[in-house]
Image (tube, helix red, strand yellow):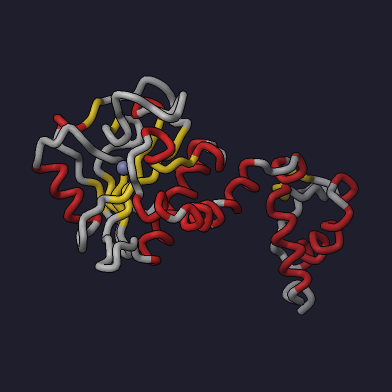
Length: 228
Ligand SMILES: [Zn+2]
């Protein structure tokens, strides 16, 4: 993931290590007008707040404040709405820059979605385990997405492609060596790609193509890029 920088949170604000692997991603917003990812990272490095988050995101930057393998204090509470999601098994992502109009800026939402997509892929977190802070404890966070649930639905729509990745069909995960073994829809395109030297052929005439790349070769073929 492309993070702008890592600035370790003050050690009073997090717990080294975690109780269980990452199973949930919790989305927050900082509720501070005009703040940035950078100045949140600075703030949590300096101050003892007994609170923290792993990532702070604004329109342009992503600052990490607590390592993924450590426990941030981002969704702890006395009572919970959610039966399972806790600090010990989740990653907290904070959206910064609350506009004057009381909205998180679209660029920040886009960037946060990018970060969450990458975390979903890294830890195999399915869409139903991406939660608002509100879903975990009932706190009104991120407020715009609690007041207007359709904004949360929009956000989750941006994460949908990743679910397909987690659910990759079997053929996508195989390495194909022989045309006969490949799905029929891919064979001709792979043959063209071999001719063009995009796919190398071994001494025994075997090719080696990861199934997940077959679709790309077919797209290139359809675009006429393998015909020249
Ligand atoms: Zn929150």
